[in-house]
Length: 142
Ligand SMILES: [Zn+2]
Image (cartoon, rainbow, N blue to C red; front, side, top):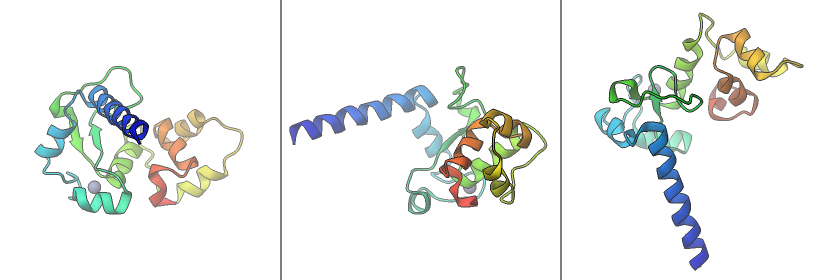
């Protein structure tokens, strides 16, 4: 039991540490400023937890988040976005092609191309393609 508590403490510490790196310790402040709601559709924190099993994500407006080494963690580059709104934003970021629900089966049928090549075809970030193919985060559009 002592070991389990210790493991939990370490994991809790790690989570906080990761968030500190990713959002410059501003995650909580961003959520508070945005009233614990998605700024695009108004989904609340409790609704988001019920539907997606996790807290509202905080998004880097410039798109340079998790997968970029250099991040702009200033408050005016951070916003609260629910998972669906975050996905819609990401699908528009890198080009004119907007990822539509109808694209998902198409993406899943593509063989012999890297995630990077597929993401270039659809004008979205590589991580979006990876999520689609792994049926993760963007599972709601399957
Ligand atoms: Zn939303």
